[in-house]
Image (cartoon, rainbow, N blue to C red; front, side):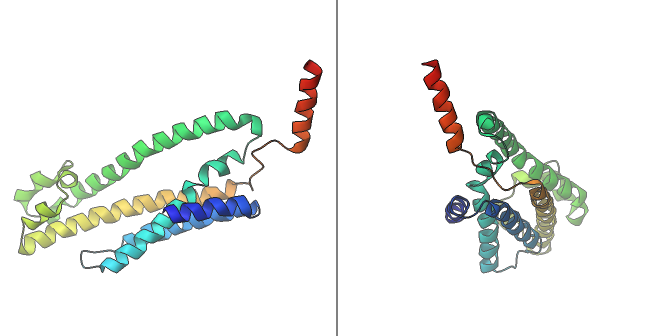
Length: 204
């Protein structure tokens, strides 16, 4: 992710302003595709497939990591930078909280909806957030045979629904890129600087 973050940051600073929009489109496309492919993973999927898909999603996140704030700042005038940056930091903190809460809600609701797939005596352990809390290799190794397969199937369904939810947010970001304009300079122009210096000289 760090490598893609560096690439994205260097690209928007060196390439034409239109690259900022293309960078956002590429980032959200990579995230959407990766998360969409996550939905087809099973317990028998190859580790290499997991790695490749994680690289794709991490690459999309990396492209946004170093470019999201400059892209937002580029939509406003220089005098609004402080307010825009403060609002961005607040929304990012807000998103971090809900970025953990929403997936856990989707996961738990999916488990509760599909509890009929597991033996009745195990349902109290998995309902009401129990599956989320007990998601560990140690828990899975405590079961064998058909019971283990049923629990794995339950987790696969819950994860699949979670990935669908995550992909929906990524696709929303992809669509909202249509509202993004090519970034404007975030530093004052030479004319503005000279005008400000002239005003300071008059005051002095």
